[in-house]
Length: 132
Image (cartoon, rainbow, N blue to C red; front, top):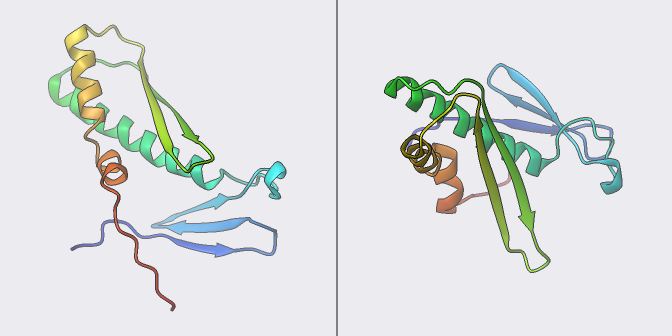
């Protein structure tokens, strides 16, 4: 296998704040105050939804460009649900500012279900953890 992404996460002196480095970018993750954090950045599940939403939007923009479709502004709204039993689901809603017919919507929804991050989440990708 070939590595396609890397990230490093370092804790800070502030409770729950994490400094994230990926490529040439730095991000901050944190928990909201009601979970003991300072809300200095998105919480981990928020980042997960951001990854899924951005992958969805990028993939759909590429697909629409290939088809010559005008989407106008594309927005992907996501909500993560989890119950006490550990069951979870994500709702994804697509919005565009240009009119699309039913066939175009059906294709976009189908393509959204096949984006790389969607497929990764649905596949239950194995995670290995070792000591460094």
